[in-house]
Length: 333
Image (cartoon, rainbow, N blue to C red; front, side, top):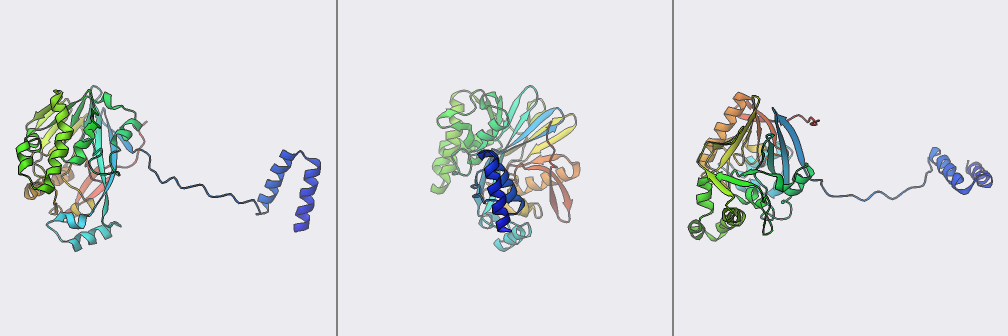
C-alpha cells in the first residue's frame, strides 16, 4: 500500500503544477485517513456582551447582563440552614459560591427609553460592570436613555450610573423611591453605620450625588406611574425604599422584582428563606410571598436582577412553593 501511494504521488508531481499537485496530494491523503494534523485552535475563554429581547405588546424589553458574581449563599441565606441550602443547590446541579447573575432591563415604550437598574460598574469587582457593553451590543447608546429607574440603592444596582467621574447616562432623569434616597444618601446614617456597613452608603452617594447636583435625580413615594405604561410599586423590606416596576402594553404585563429574591434554586421552593442583605428580612419575606402568589395566579411575565440571565419567565405554584419557568427562546424579528 505504501509503495502504491508513493508511486501515485511521484506521478502527480511530474505531470501537475506544484499548487495543483499539493491539492491533489492532500485530497488523496485525506481519503486514505492520513491527512496531515493541524494544531487545535486556541480557546477564546471570553463571553460576548449579553442581551436578550422580548416583545411585550407594543413595548420592546431587552434584558442586559452586567455579568455574574460568586456569592457564598450557604452563609448568606437566613431563616434556613447551610445544609438545607447545599441540598437545594445540589438538587439543581449547583454549588457554592454560586455564580449569581446581575441583570438590568431596558424598556422601549416607543416614546421613552427606560432602563431599570444599571449594574455594578466598578463597585463589585472585575466580574461585573458589563451592562454598558451589553447595552451597546443591543443596539442602543447610553445617551439615548431617557429615564433610569432604580429598584434600590445597593451597589450592584446603582454603580453603573457613573462612568468614572462622568454621568453614564447624561440625558436621563434618575428616579427612585424617596425612602431609599433618604436612607442611603444621608451622611448622618453613614456616620452611624458600622465600619463594614459604610461602603454601601459611599457607593450610593458616589453613584447618585452627581445626578442630584446636576438636577437630574427625582424621587417618588410608593406606587407611582412614571411614564405611560411603566409604574413603580412599593415593595419595601429588602431596603427601606425597595421598589418593583410594572410595564404593561396591550394587556401584556411584566413585573421586574429587583431583589425580592436572590437564589432561585432555594427561594422558589421555599419562599420563607431570607438573605443577610435584607434591611428588614420579615418585611422582605412578606413582599416576596405576596409577589410569588400574585404572579402565579395571574400568569404574567416576571424578571429579577439575580435570576439566571436573562432572568425572564413565569412561575407556577407547586406544593408549598413555586417552580420557575424560563421564557421560551424566540428571536425577535
